[in-house]
Length: 226
Image (tube, rainbow, N blue to C red; front, side, top):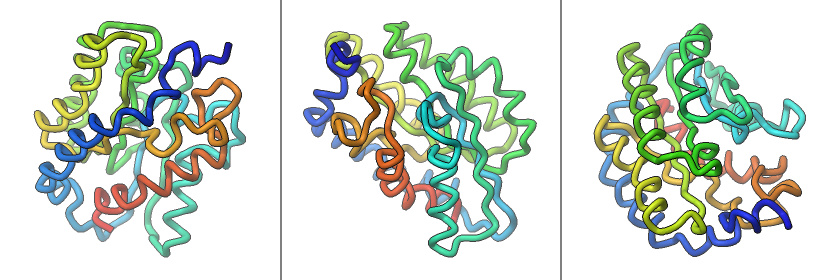
């Protein structure tokens, strides 16, 4: 049995349109946050993509990872002065990411995209734990005066309605609390499509990452004020 069948997550992601609609309303209502975080930037930008295997490029060559493809997409649009930094570590939970945040910030970013929580969910860790860790990460970034774009994740349906409700609310709640722009579901357009995922049914292929870049790019540009 493939992992995506085992977890029941990616087979059912097409049925979360209602939840995504709610999260997109949160995104739209956070327009002021986008304006604030994405104020016009004229100097060099160092975008730190801080996440797990979905950022690191699990089982992909380095040039196929999300940060690498995002960097090329920006250049293809004539956007200059932006360096995209890959701070993804495969297998990272929110707790592990919090523990290495200082190390990641040694890269001297000017902006941070936070993509975390999938491993907490797949391991069935308490959503409250993930919420607390993500809140601490965001607080630390804000204290460093770094604009943050938060990328959301959705829980596997087989974890139960209560778990899903608690987990899925983490991202819109934290975005509202901290006044952050939110991209509701990092795997939007890729989850559930076997052609865009590796054999494990969880990690995107090069082509899957390209879809993720295409869908997130307008939000990245707005976040960076470009």
